[in-house]
Image: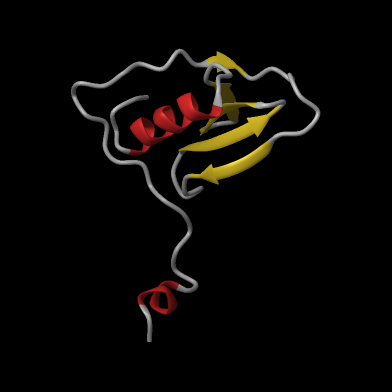
Length: 98
């Protein structure tokens, strides 16, 4: 059986790495409806209290952060060019930004 086959039914999505002591602080903003449609390109595992989504809309990209605890709070990074958000997304996943 392949490694992928062994994961079937047990893999949800990627988890973010623990936060590093030297990390970038992301300027999170309250979610605002800026586009009719948003496409989620990647996301972190929903089993955690805080989840992240790499989103595309209106020719730009951003990271959406959702915090679930006694309700739901949704924030977004700045909307930037896709390449810039790809770098931010990677830093978030590696624990280098939050």
